[in-house]
Length: 531
Image (tube, rainbow, N blue to C red; front, side):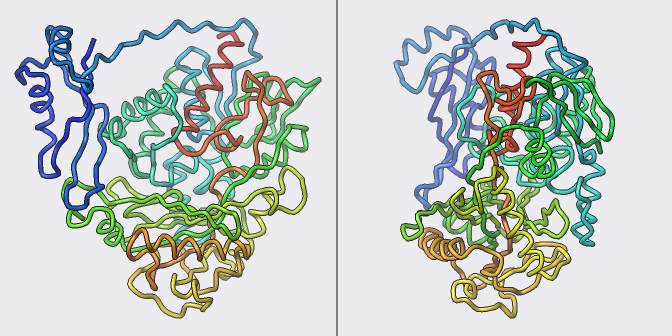
C-alpha cells in the first residue's frame, strides 16, 4: 500500500528534481530507499506575490511502510488505499445491430471508448471531418472567411474543445475524472497533465490526442464515419427503432446522442420527433484581450515570466445588483488568440484558443453575462437557441457580413464611443475586424452589466479596464441553450434507447465533465444491454 505525502513545498527557485529528496527527508529515510515515486498533485501558492511556492502531494513505495508511517505520526502522511475495480455486471437485453454514438467531441469520444473497451464495438457517426482535414478547413475559413457549416470550430472530430485552450479543470467530483486524464496522457497529453492543479493540453497537442483515442476505439472493434449527419430518428410506441444518417436507414435501439451545444438543426429535428427539451440559462457577451504581461504581473508580481511559471490566468466573477445578473470570465486563454467560431452562415461567433506553450502576446477570455428564459421570446423549448441566433446575426451584419468581427476598445465601450484606431493591443481575431459599437449587437442589460463588470474587475487586476484593451463581438456558445431531461438510466424521458449526453444535452460544461457524462451513459447502456 503506497504512502501519500501531502504538503511538500518547493520554493520557486528549487528544481522539481528535489521533490523525491524532500519526500525521503519527510519520511526520515534515504532517497535510495524509495522504490517507486509518483507526483499526484501540484498547485501554485501565489497569495503572497513576493513569496511564490509550489505545493505537492506524492505517492511513495518503500520497505516497512507501516512501520515508517506509525512512527512519524504526521497527519500529512497517510496510506493511499488501492481500490480494486468491482466486476462490471452486464445487462441481458439485445442490441439491434450495434450501439451507435452520434458526435465525436469529448462526450461521444469517451462514450465510444468505454463501450469499445468492454467489447461493444460501437458505430460512430460524426457530421464533421477528421481532425487533420478539419484543421485545414478551419484555417482556410480563418484566412478567407468561407464557412463550411458541417466542419468548423464547432463541428468535427474533437468537438469544440479541439479548437480551445484544452482546459482539463472541472468542479465535478467523480472518480471517472481520473480515468479521463489517464487516457489523455496515455494518448499523448504531457505527463504533468495528470498532476497539475490547472492542467491544460493546448489545441496543438489535443488534436493528436483525439486522433490517438479514435485509433484505440477502432483497434477495439469500433467503427468511425466522418461527414455523416444524423438526419432523423424513427420512433414507435416510445422506443427508438432506427435512425437515418446521410439518407441511409440504420436499425438502432441504443443511441448515444453526443451532438454538442451548437447542433441547432439536430435540436430542431429532435423536437419535431417529440423528444422532450426545456429551456436552459446560459451566458452571452464578448471576448476581451489584454497584453499577457499585464496578467502575469498582476498574478505573480516580481516573479512574472519566471522560468518555473507559465502564462498566468484568471477567473473573475461579479454580481450586478441593479440587474440581478452574474458577470464572469469564461474559457480564459493565456497567451492565446480569439478565433472565428461560426457554425451557421450569416451568423458570427467568437471563441478563444491557446497552444500548449501559451506564449503569444495577448491574454483573452470570454466576458459574459447570464441570460435565461425571462430574456427569450416565448416559451418554446428552442427559444434560447433563437435568442443566440438573433444576436449572432446582428454581430455578423455589424462586422460587415463577411465574418469580420466588430471590435471596440475598452475605454470607448465604457464611454459609448466608436473606436477609430488601435492602441497597444493588436486584435488576434481572423479573418479581420471592423471598428463598431458593440452595444448594437448585444442586449441592453448585457451591455450595462459588462460595463459594471469591467470597472469592478479593474480593481481586482490592475490594467483590466485599460483604455486600449480590445473587446471582440460576440460570444454566445458558453453552454447549450436547452436541456434534454433523462430518466434514472440516463435515457431521454421521451424515448427508450436514446441517451442524450454531454454539453449538447445540457449535462456538462467543459472537456472533463462532458467526457465523464459520456462514460456514465455508456455504463448505463452496458447495465441494460448484452455485449
